[in-house]
Length: 127
Length: 127
Image (cartoon, rainbow over all chains, first blue to last red):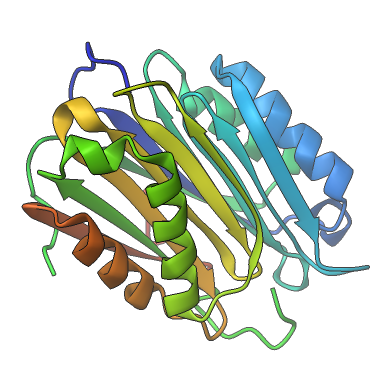
């Protein structure tokens, strides 16, 4: 979002976490603090946040809006699953946020997809 | 986020838009209404929203938190570029949101990546 931006303009990282304890995935204050800590680890600046617990023993959905883009999380405790995405531009370090979230949630299994954004080409499938 | 969820648990769609007018990409009320209309088109329920304009002639960053996950947008008017992502679970229709956003912004070129989330496997690169 800076006139001096270089390509790609941002890095969007999708993190899938499996085998996470349901107790963590239903704890809204814990999840919000986790994302705040992840933003700090990445060197990002938080502009706002919104978290919503669906109810006792149910999932959480939440997002941090950042000056460098966003971090979101959506949890399915009944599946031990959390979907995270970290989108950052500028000097922020998305993989530092990813590492912190993965480590803290203690996933049995995880996968990461790195998606460069604003590359100036259209190499992806056009529809 | 329902106990009766089927796999994949959600669909995460990344939309890259190039050649969009800078006037649209700097208009925060327009961009917020665009995302609200996209959520409605998808049949999603908005839980909260947060939008931030970086200043006159500068980009916008914003997100809608949905009961079905989220929609975000980050704009670089100096590049005529917007990065959108639409993550939805349940019965919501992410591609309806994608189509509305793409059509309204009148991009010269666009690309879409569909990323199933919570598929139960780890087909993606593990790091």
